[in-house]
Length: 311
Image 1 (cartoon, helix red, strand yellow):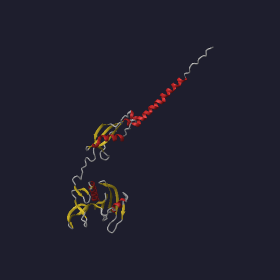
Image 2 (cartoon, one colour):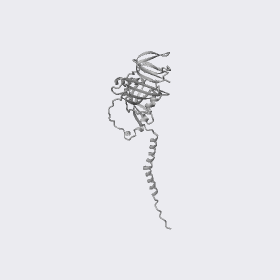
Image 3 (cartoon, helix red, strand yellow):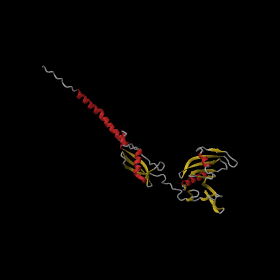
Image 4 (cartoon, rainbow, N blue to C red):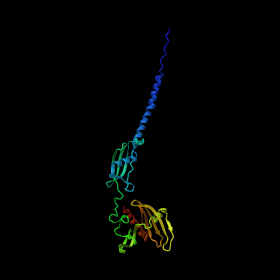
């Protein structure tokens, strides 16, 4: 019986396997590596400026705080060209670490410090320098002023030494409702109560006898919208303006300014209305001339910077 010739075995399976292995090397392995990289990027925090600032401030503790704009004189900087690193060119610098410069107040001293913050949160001081605080050369003009504290009226404050103080006493109840600041104080008598009056009163700080009437009126007016007020039998033309709000010991204060026309018998008036807790307060100063008025406005604002409501 003749032999049947055998066919040579095909190498097709081996060829397919080799192609698959090649495909695996070209596509699958890089894809898996890409997934690993994406996982790492998702896990590692990027060192943004916000992250770096938070890490530095937390590492400094309560001994230092960050200065705000306006609290320091920005140092003069020189424009220096820096060759970017490969990580910077690829946009990966925030991944591995970041440099941040902070203006700090540490134990009363102004500093400008540069830190390097790594991706795992460690901080390293790179450089340190001094920064001038804007209030370094300013003296507290109220430091040596007289102090008034009245539990009955519910506030304390400081006032210039060249002014005299008289308490505003209700002639019927004999209760104290506020204070006046001015010149030429003299003694008076309300029944059995000895009181003081002022010949010239420049500043009034007292509880609002009309309670919320004026406070609510001012609160409904537009800010920086001057109103021309026509004359009456006793007054001439004047311009009334609600000024931007301020704060007095943490409470919102509404401010107004009254400016008389030239030749008008009116005076300049700067008034402030405050609601503190359950009480309303009225504060004002007046002047016959613009220069006198501007000077008294400035002094009143200084007085109010020392104002404290009592519990």
